[in-house]
Image (cartoon, rainbow, N blue to C red):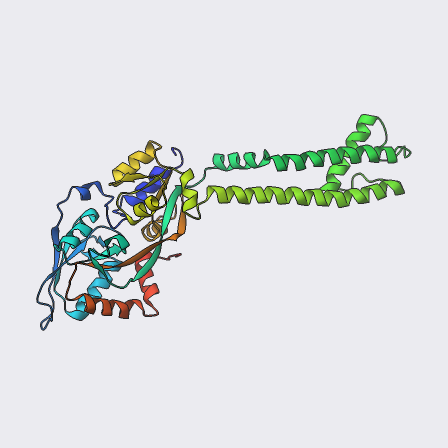
Length: 384
């Protein structure tokens, strides 16, 4: 993958704190942090019905949650949570921790809620989830094909057995027609195909090629009636041969693009896939028996890519598309996997008293007609 700018793609997509999993962070420094570090405290207004200050787990995971230039937490999920907390008068404090710790802290009840979690059926008995507020899919990031790779693909198509057979039929047909035209036109001494055999054959061969491809320069024409009749049938045959040849090449190109592209999990085994350990995508790959290299930090992913250990990175389309929208010059291709649901909701500890009220307010916001446009203010245009 060297020379294909894949390391640069991954660096730009992942270095800014991009984490694709509700289980594992991509930052090397995040994995070394303590399980909980209090970042921000929000105080409820007077008359709050919630006297207990909730511990809200957050992590650097744009566009869902991230710190702005002055260290204030922001993002789609953070903004949604703050709207709900403000309406309900909930007192809370943000607790920053690695993604790998969030589920653990929620299971043990050391944290109360996290707004940046993808639904997980495996955790349904250990923690609780609100109604979803964003539906997404898995995605795979691959390096953009270089010019050399494109030429190699086209060369392989030209060497295809069917293409070669049709091409050979074209040559044989041109030779046969040229010989026939020379025989028919031999009586016309001043004709375009008279003279020495080599010259006459060359002229006839040129005429057959021009006629077959419908170019029709008009520099050479048959003079006899029989020659024109023969030429008429060669025109029909030439159109048919060219149509078959063009269709075969186009079909081969389409199949090659489909083969090299990714439309489902079934296309992944031909790649060396990398993913974040413990992520939702990690579970989906294991469930389907697709081998994958698993990493805990961005540095591990980048090193594996540079060493050629991976040729594709599987994750979540929202964060990947978010970074692609903000880096239009990236030489990477992003493929969505429609058969891999990534559904975002708030995750809470078991028995959280405010869960019902939080869920009610979340539904009020996420079911509004303008919710998609509000979400895209954070994520940019989404093709989900």
